Structures are given as structure tokens and as C-alpha cells.
Amino acid sequence: MGFNIDAIKIDEVEIENTNEKSSIYVAKVEYKELNKICKLGNVSINREVDDDRAEKMVDYIKKKGSFYPTIVVATTKKNIIDYSDMKKKIEVRIREEQDKFIVLDGQHRFESINLLVKENPNIERYQSVLLIENINDFQQRKIFVDINDTPRKVTTGTKLRFEKTIANYYSLSFVDFRDDVLECILMDDNQTSNNKEIPYKYIVKFNEKLINVLQKNFARGKLTMTEIDQYKESIFQINNMLIEILKFSQNNDNQITRYELFYIVLGEIFSCYMSNSLNTKEELEINKIQDEFTIIKNNLPKISSDFLDDIPKDQSGKKEKIHNLISNVIGRK
Image 1 (cartoon, rainbow, N blue to C red):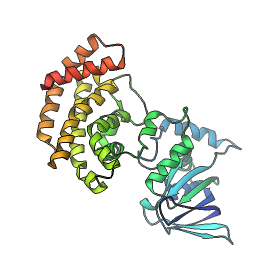
Image 2 (image 1 turned 60 degrees about the vertical axis):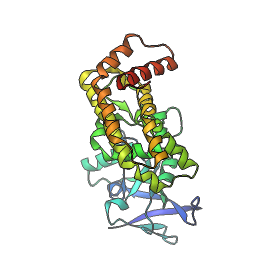
Image 3 (image 1 turned 60 degrees about the horizontal axis):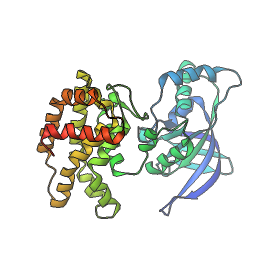
Image 4 (image 1 turned 30 degrees about the vertical axis):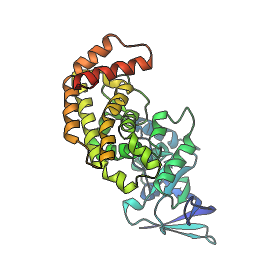
């Protein structure tokens, strides 16, 4: 499907570490065409959209004289845009859903416009769009943080999932792989006040400790991305075990799982299996890990109650107590 859109090419920049270039345009897009050429990205690119917020914004944009600031979008696809400098237009070829531009900034504006178009399909309104052509997922995440990097807008939890680390790579892949996990994950929060949902940050912190040796060896050039990917299935299995503990905790109201330190300690305790696998060049001992996770799950009510009965005041004391409680039930010193 082709679209002819009024646009001006404002810049062309070299893409870092490549011989390619990225063109940047300012375009004027009809409301009713916006959803046909743009889409929201997955959790690795966008925050989750707050539906209530988007619906409230519809009331604003309906008002006479209202307007939105420019929405920033990008495409990883090459050769889907033809620009005519003489006509000041771009021709966009959208053949399939994955060709659509990803919204980097303005996802709530974008969603509210979609809602308004559903109410009034024949509405004659336009939205200004800054279009960045031919950039990869990592560059898109960087632009998102650069645009939103203020204490008010971007939480530590949000920044964490845009970091270029192996732990974040595993964690995002796991969350995207397990759709049901999103039901109990808070993607942008730093902490939680209950054990029903946990921040995505906790998953990353668990994996940071679990695969610390992999991250170090990758950073030193001792492991390739292909070798990192070979561990992905095993890491997913271990993350599944972590989610089992979380769901067990939800059903039994074990409040220890709302503490970030619980996940950090678990990652540290099980990191020995990763180190051993890397040193011996053998597969991870998944059965042993599963056995220990099962023991922890079965003893979680006692671990939780013992911790909550007398919570140390300082972080180091809390961490030490959680470590001792878990180590004792699985027979570690």
C-alpha cells in the first residue's frame, strides 16, 4: 500500500559504526492515515500505553484549536521511502505490518488520535511527524531515552530496559516470549507495595547477578553473541522457575517477593552454576537448579515470615538475612 505525504527532508546523518546514512523528514500526516503507516513498538522500545490517559486525551484533541506537538517515529526498513525534493513529498510503501514506522515519542498522542478516528472516520485533521529513516532497534531505544531523559518522565526502571547489557537482552526476550508474564510485571516502576506485581527491574537485577560471568566475558571479547544466544533457552528455563516462585507467593501472600533484594540474592546464589558451566564448557545443571528452586518455593512461607518478623534496618543487613534464610533451606553455607 502506498501513501503520498507532504514532507520536507531536513537532514541526512551517518549512522554510527556503519557506512549507511539515515534521512530525517518532517511530515504532515492525516489523522486517518497515521495508524496505517505507524504503530507502537514492543516493550523494548515503548512504555506501555495507559488506556485511561489516552481516552482522556481524546477529549482534549476534539476541542477547536487544539493540537499536539510533533510525534517522533522511525523505521528500521530500507527503501520504503521515496522523497521528491521538487514536490516536497515522500512516497511511503507499506507492504506488511512490520514495515510500519515505530512511534518513539508520543505513543499516548498516537493512541488518542487512533481512538478519535474510530469515533469519526472522516475527520479532516493532520499531525506533524518527525520521521527518522533506517535506524536499528538499539538506536531507537537510545533516541527514546535521549528524548525522555528527565527525572519526571523516565524512571530508573524504564531506563534499565533500554540498557545494552546481556542481562537486559535476556530479560526483554523472556518477557516478550512469555505474554502471560506481562500480567504480573510493572515495566516502568522502580518498586512495588505488594506481591501481586513486580517491576521489570527485579527480573533484570536477578539476571544481572545470575549471568554476571557471561556479561564480563562478553565485555572482554571472550564470548560472541552466538555463544550468548546458546544460553538463552537455559536462562528462560531459570526465569520460568523465578516466575513460579512469584505466582506461588501471590497465592500464599508471601510478602518477601516485593523486595528487590530477594531477586538480587537469588541471582547471586544461582550464579555459581553459570560460572561452573562456563569453566567446564558443560551445559547448565538445570535439574539441580530446578530442585533447589522447588525447595525454596516450598519453604517460601517460612522464609518470608522469618524475614518479616525482624527486618534489619540497613540494606546490607536485609540482604545478609535473606541470603542466610535461602541458603539454609537449600543446604548452602
